[in-house]
Image 1 (cartoon, one colour):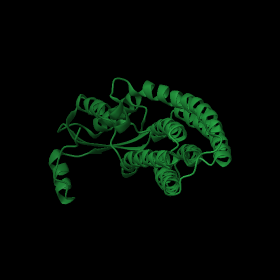
Image 2 (image 1 turned 30 degrees about the horizontal axis):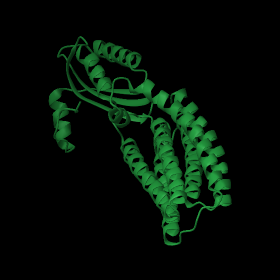
Image 3 (image 1 turned 180 degrees about the vertical axis):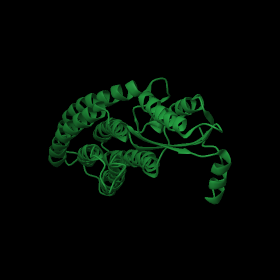
Amino acid sequence: MAAGSTRVVVAALIGNGLIAITKFGAAAYTGSSAMLSEAIHSVVDTGNQALILFGIRQSKKPADEDHPFGYGMELYFWTFVVAILIFAVGAGVAVYEGVEKIRYPHPVGNAFINYIVLGAAMVFEAVAWWLAFKEFEKRRGQKSYISAVRESKDPALFTVLFEDTAAMLGLIIAFAGIGLGQALEMPVLDGVASVLIGIILAVVAAVLAYECKGLLVGEAANKPVVRGIRAIVQCRPGVKALNELLTMHLGPDDILVNLSVDFEDGISSEAVEAAISSLETEIKNSYPEVKRLFIEVQSLQGHLASRTRNGRQDPKHPL
């Protein structure tokens, strides 16, 4: 787990905790539904970041007898829980409060207090968002933003970035709802703003759940890593064919690699052992995130027969 992700989560946790307290005070004082929705949003974000930090800590636990591959996927699980909480608590409460305000509208009292709190919250959220965005940019490289999120194996970073983006949009909507409701003497707009905030949270939750689901089920390493490992094996003297290359992320920086390799006929067992040892060293040196590497020596015919018995028809691992 990159230290940058942990710093981003801690910064967001502190910022959202302070913002939540301020928002609840303003909501209680003014009676604004949109402000209450924003306060609940900040509380959910604070709790979520605490869960992500817990997941990061758990994922660093060493492997043991019951979990021989380690605890790296704990982070994926807790991030999925975060997505559920955003939807169930954040979006659900925001929509409920908004509908109630639409059904029974009442003017917001002391709206100026709301403007001050929203402005201060915007500053704090902007700082947290900028820290997350800078870290994301460092890892994005030349990829598009969508590709970078889809290919990322570190959910902690993009979860915080998504949450902070949703928070920024929510603050803008809350500001507009309260301001327009006061200017047009239409307090129902405060409720509409709350519903819109809930919809934004629901969309963010759905995207996060989808991305984390893929990581929980088990995603292959990114294509450049797979291609690099394939090239290392195929260029090794004595290797006749690479029958299959399987990879899976067990954590953001923990890749499991399984290889089925066919060596040249007539090569000695000592030469095969030396080649396997050399392959393991080169692959792990080239890709430090490869923590576990299993190499099966198998003829192509034997490999294909094994796949057929197991009901696997495609003899090639997709790049």
